[in-house]
Amino acid sequence: MAGVGRTTRLSLQGLAAYSLPVISFVAGVVLWQLLISLFRIPAYLFPSPSAIVQVFFTGHVNWLQQTWITLNEAVTGAVIGVIVGFAIAVVITLSAPLRKILMPYIVALQVLPKVAIAPIIYILLGFSNTSRVLLIVILTFFPIVINVSTGLTDVDRNLIYLLQSLRAGQATIFFKVRLPNSLPYFFDGLKIAVSGALVGAIVAEFVSSNSGLGFLILNSQYTFNTVAAFGAFTILTVLGLLLYAAVIVLARQLMPWYRSG
Amino acid sequence: MASVVVLENVGKRYTTVKGKEIHAVKDVSLSVQTGETVGIVGPSGCGKSTLLRLIAGVERPSSGSIHREAAGGHFIVGYVFQDSSLMRWRTVYDNIKLPLEVVKKRDLGNVDRLIDLIGMKGFERSYPIELSGGMQRRVSIARAFVHEPSIILMDEPFTGVDELTKEALQTELGNLIRTLRATALLVTHDIEEAVFLSDRIFVMSPRPGAIVEEIPVNLPAVRDASTRSNLEFVAAAGRVRAKLLELHAMRVEAAT
Image 1 (cartoon, rainbow over the protein chains, first blue to last red):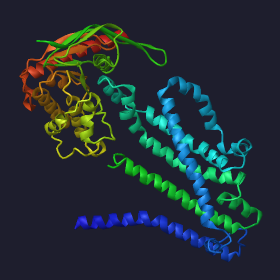
Image 2: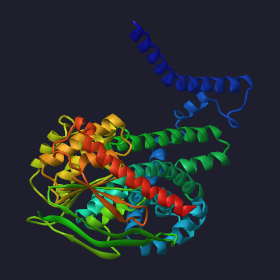
Image 3: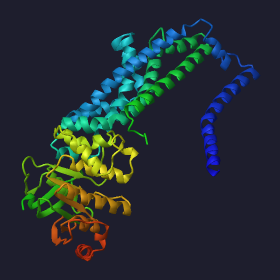
Image 4: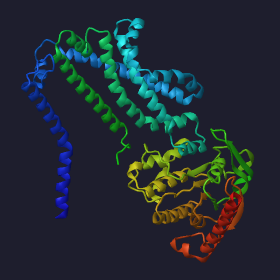
């Protein structure tokens, strides 16, 4: 009997854990709708949720196309950024001299707010897709370099001793200890990188573009089409969530040994 | 009897990152014979772990020499660490298999044999995170034996394990060493552990670690829970404890 009572209470707690955030979100949207109607706030100042939903169906904007442009830039930049970041992390981990040589540049880039260089990239590379992708690469490779190099270095000393005692070379130690050890760090970096990729895509489009969600937001400002900007915010939120979820799913697939207990 | 490792006047000094010179080991001479288990007991930080790394060939001595002999083949060690130091991304089976991969031995029969000996059948595909602390120690012990090393080096193998599990693990480890006719060198600060597992015990002084006494343990080869109340067990433990207390008193005197 006691067992039955306990399971019921547990499932109620479980329900509360999942339902409370949903209730909170729905209540917030309803309240938002009510406040806009109650105070008759015009849509160009602050649109209501229903107006935002409507904007997706008015046909003035090709939402799918604009979303695709931004997503394509973000993903391309992120993929290149991750590859470059991983390579740099490996190089600075394996070579102490190279680490010391590259360190000042890495630290300088680390502390610089990277979006600040966006307007200047276009002087160098022109108003092209390449410039936009480059900004995203700069934003995404950073968390990967920092996290992966930590993961490659922050290994159990005993495992190194163990392999050295078995006459293993640096390559064996790298592939059997350092690389697998860096995986959880890599995925933590990837979570930061995917949100950075979206920031980069939007900033790049602010500075130079005639398409994409960033351009759409900027254009909405000139035309007082606030509803369209909020439509773009909604899509960006969903994109951010999907990219983040994709990283988590990938991490669970590749690391069944991590927090599986 | 042939010796597996002979240390002659081995010393080790090294400089820390902050530039401080540390004299870890001083003038250690000892030998380990084939088939015996030698215990080294000393206070924490007396250079015991350094001594094991020197024997493993991971570090080089600053003075003295180490002779390693292997009966037919290469001298190679098996290593058991303080915290089991398993690869968390590898299953039980793959963790135990690791040394065979590194020394490129094709025959993986020993992996199954050891899983059986340590009573971990059915856990082959489990990851370390899914195991209890005691089970993790068993896996790390199996990993040390799997490639049939010339000598098993054990560095405080049961630190942080609760008392009852520790005694059970010590009995299992003793049985494993005997069954596989292994040669072992055990480094520990746990007096009872050293007496239970060893044929001879060396007492080490605080840093710079030097061997100050050799104490024989005249116990039967087969040891179990009842061994712990054997008079010889109690006597040997008493001798080790007396020597360690004497060293401790000397250090306190020197400090005041």
